[in-house]
Length: 374
Image (cartoon, rainbow, N blue to C red):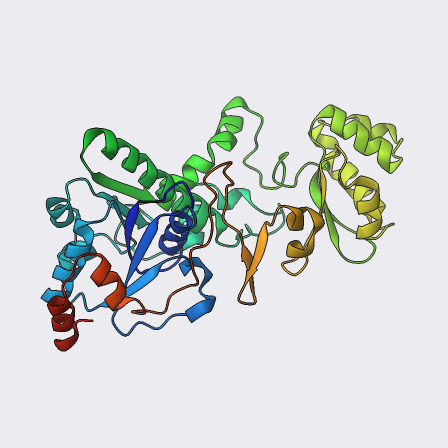
C-alpha cells in the first residue's frame, strides 16, 4: 500500500480540485470517505477523480445528518471541503465545530479566490483564477487572445496539488504538535506560486510582458511545436547550447543565421525557416531522427496515442481498469507502492459499511435510515 496508509480523510463532495486532491491522497493509500449529498447524481464508474474511496450519502440540512458527519470527523485525520466561504459554517461543519470535536484535525479548504479578500465570495472557474495571476496572459500567441491551458493550471496544479501538499504538511505538523489547523488553499495563491520562476525572469529583465516573445511561451524557435508533413506535430526544446548544436547537426541545418540562438530579434525569421523544414517529413520520420536523443524532442500525441507510446507502456503511466484507460497513481515510491484502491463509488454506496466500521451502532444506523437522513 501507499505511503499514506493509515491516514483517514473525510471529503465533502464537490467538483474539480477537491475530488482531484482526494484522489491523490487515496492513490497514496489514505482511507478517504466521501460524504455525498443524499440523492446526488454523478458520473458513476467513469468519474475517475472519485476513484479509490467509499461514499456515504447524508442529508446535511438535517441536524442528525450533521451529527453523523461530525461523528465521522471525530475519527479523521484530515478533511477536504470546496464550498464558498461560509457554507460549511452555516451547515454547522465549519473549522470551529470540527476542531472542537477533533483538535488534531487538519481542515483543508479549497477555493478559487481564498477564504478572504474582495473576491472571496464571487463565483469563478479555473480560467478566471489563472487570469488574475498573470499566468493566463502569458500563454498563447502574440496575435491571438490568451489560450486556456485546459483546467490543469488552476484547478489541478495551483489548486488540488497545493491542497494535497498543504494537508500533508499539516498532518506532519499535527503529529509533532498534537494540534490541527486550517489549510486555506486558494487557486490564485497556488498559481501565483507556480509562476515563481517566470516572475524571477521578469525581475531579471529576461522575460517580456509580450505574450509569445519569450523562450518558454513559444516565442523562441528552439522551444515550440511544429507541424509535420502529415499534419501531426512535434515538440522541440533544444534550449541548452549543446542540445541546440545537436539539433542543428541532426537536422542538417548549416544556415549561419541559426548560430544566433538567443538573438530575440532573429527568432521570428528562424521560426519561419523551421516551420518550412518540419513540413518536409512526417512526424514518424522526425521521431526516427530525434526521439531518444539529447535534442529534447517528443512527438505531440493525442489522448488515444499517449497510452500506447512505448515509454508510457514501459512505466505503466496509464493503466486500464474495467475497460477504462486512466492515468496511474504518481509519483512512484521504492517501497510503499501506491495503487488505486477501488473504482469510483456511487453516492451512498457504502453507507452501512462505512458507518459500522467508523463506530456507529446498529441502532444509530437504523435511525438515520428511518428518519431519511441517509
